[in-house]
Length: 77
Image (cartoon, rainbow, N blue to C red; front, side):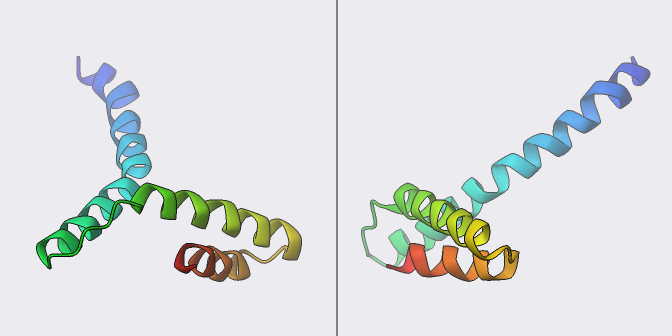
């Protein structure tokens, strides 16, 4: 049983945590905004626009750091 858990369980948990972190961070940010009394319905859209613009800037420039700035700028617009 322990061998099965080490072989399949721990890598699966690491993958799940890695894939859900961006969604959890967006959810926590939305929770803070809702507690302040502001309604924001576009969290998923902002994440999508930021990801697409960051990818586009990274492909065009070849610099991942400019891609991060492009993602932030795309989501801010």
